[in-house]
Length: 358
Image (cartoon, rainbow, N blue to C red; front, side):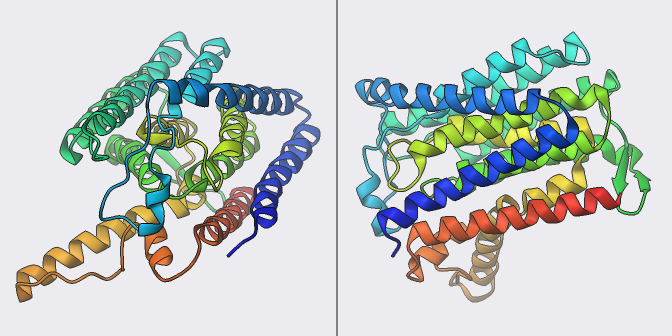
């Protein structure tokens, strides 16, 4: 088990790593906005979450723990949740203040984020109200997410903000044409749900999101496309917002982001990926999220197949998502989170290396 000192140093290590990347990127690309966006977002997020926790506690927006979860999570009951109501409005304000390629794209971007925010808000609120950590049904959430993704993709496509040519290593492109819209919808919905599933341990989703957004910020600047710089700005801003939140979300968490935060974060990654044509690198950057989601799909599928064949369902993992499997194997959640962070950093480095080769 990690000590309090080592737990703190893990967060400091992530914070220091992001700071170095931000400073180097600011100098290399000669764009001061990188550091300004990161620093202001980090500071604003930290202060807002610090005082926002008290407000959330006063409104009794407290976490319920599912009975079938790991026993070690029972002590997390009554931790303030719905932290997304603090950081997402800050990001919406940043979007309002930024200069988008077109006003219609800014409105569409805001509308979609707000839509995912409302889905998460309803799900969290119902879960708290019902006191069973269960809000909207899976089908209800998935339907609403797909609907929002379809609206976003169609409007973006009709206004020529989505490119059908996907860049692959060694200066090649693949024109996917009719697959463009389905791929864009799948990207947004899958990333939204994947981040949501990853948000099961203190600091796991927030830390991984900060890493992915930082990688996206650098990757977009490497495109050397002035029309896409706004998405780099937003990515670095979200890096700061996630780290400011993580200061209070790391073990032992003083606040959880809830679906209000996780669904939005995933959808933002997905939308930036689609609008900047960063499918390959985002796929690599988001490896931790996608593995977590795949572990759930694999677990459910295997259980249903074995139940159909043998009248008794069997499980591949002790529990899904994957991080719970490691917990039940005896690993402390701080060790799991730290290893997932390290894995995500290596994936981002790999993605950037591949990007440079494109």
